[in-house]
Amino acid sequence: MFSLSKQTVFGVVGGDRRQAAAAVRLAEMGYPVRAFFLDGIPSLESSGLLCSDSSLLGQCDVVILPMPVSRDGEQLNAPFDSRAVSLADCLSQCREDALLFGGKVSQKDQQLAQRFRLNLRDYLLQEEMAILNAVPTAEGAVQLALEESDHTLWESRCLVCGFGRCGKTLALLLKGFGAQVTIAARKQSDLALARTLGFSAVPIGCIEQFLPHQQIILNTVPAPILGPSELTYCPPDCLILDLASLPGGVDLPAAEQLGIRALRALALPGKVAPFTAGHIILDTVINMIEADSPSDCAETESMR
Picture 1 (tube, one colour):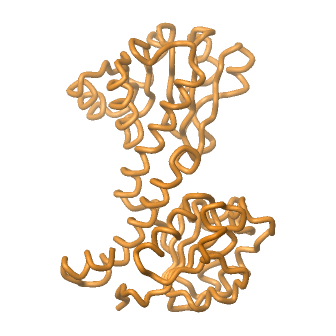
Picture 2 (cartoon, one colour):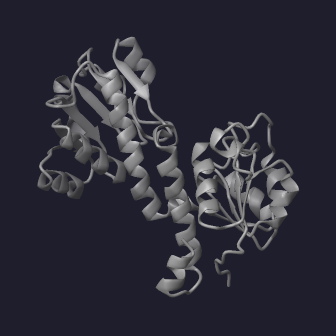
């Protein structure tokens, strides 16, 4: 059974500034770190962590891949690197006994890993990751609303569609700004919880009657919510932010035709808070490793 030690070699591969933050943090914690396909990120340029030789992945006991691992199942997600990196070539360098972690691991990614007899686990499926990642997502949405709206958040009428992890965090943040927040959700339990937290609540199938009064609408549901029919009820001067994963929940072309400002806001943690988001990823990976290796609390803390 694998156990972390200060001799454990980490490989941080591809991705954006979140990955760079994770690599730097690992080095600060005293672990040997190799960073691959992260050229062009200032925080790594002078760190001495960058490796141009991908064969050194074979030295790594733990490999942290980006989120998403790949956007097409073929190329590694490495937007800061000038090279087009084959995911297969990257995985072929890893040892069979290495621990591999990635975010939003697709079926293609998993099949490719299995071809090389690698065990690839998805850190985004961890509940702690999803909960904590909702914070930079919500803060990024608020930042975008402040930049794009003609109104203050204070006393703005805001509709939050969906009351999952992100919806809850976002609603509480908006409430802290003094916004008048209404929650639209499918589950009666979510509607009841929203009411106990001091929000107005409406079944998501009945939002048409609430749409004409909203100044800011924020969608977190990755399913059709605001289509051409629903959008006709929205005021022309309202702002709509679609935070949901693709394909999203807002018909953006229909909104444009109606003259409504509607923006798709994806991957906000990596854009607005890469340092925090990278640490959240790293903490999740370490917790996944430690959950599989029995150790007492004192030993666990000494590894951090």
